[in-house]
Length: 287
Ligand code: PRT
Ligand code: ZN
Image (tube, rainbow, N blue to C red):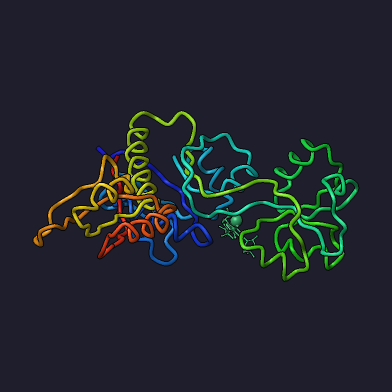
């Protein structure tokens, strides 16, 4: 009998491709994603990976051609397909924003009344305008939205932004955020129980990789008389590990800390007397 496999759709080439394949690899899934491949079977985990255009992923998942997929929340919302959002993945972060030419004296959303707004996201934008009672004229175009105002095609744009430099170089100013977005794991509705089991396993690994990314492993040497103060600064999963060093009067302290608190804590540790501080990345954090 053929082994049951979970079919997962990821972007073939684009902004989410590398992060999506490296996430699967960090989850211990071995596969070949060589150039031009459309499909790949993992060697050591019951999944089959499809490499697709991101815009097609919500529909493939909704139709059951793929069981799960990784796609930007922006693409998911625009597609309007009935699928389940399972887990935000923390990469591919951007926002869908409204932007106007620099000389547009913008004050509020009401300024879009009667204006032509170019976008590749008509569904999301019309819902946003309806919610905010704005009567604008949405022009759906398929790409290069940022040049629409300069060629007289529109008065404003609604487009994805990350650094903002594309808007800036095109003489546009971001004025409203329509939605925040990041890559998300989606699944088709009513996933059969045997595939649900595989999805749960994959999800457990994804969560471990995400937790590991947020945390750092820290090791340091502490003079014994300062141990209490140093241990108090370090949270750890339960509590820090403390081991005596060969040199009497000193201990080695190990702990896991949140990346956001790293520098703050390291500075305090140094003040209290910690030496030889090492900070390491964590591959997986199983909780
Ligand atoms: O070929 P395929 O259809 O699969 O890919 P695509 O060309 O439609 O999508 P792609 O690869 O460009 O983006 C895939 C997903 O990445 C998007 O759907 C978003 O979820 C996410 N993402 C994150 C972004 C950006 N950041 C981003 N900056 N998608 C597009 N951009 C654009 C932005 O619109 C601007 O034109 O990149 C340009 C540079 O952005 P700035 O603000 O840094 O200048
Ligand atoms: Zn696309």
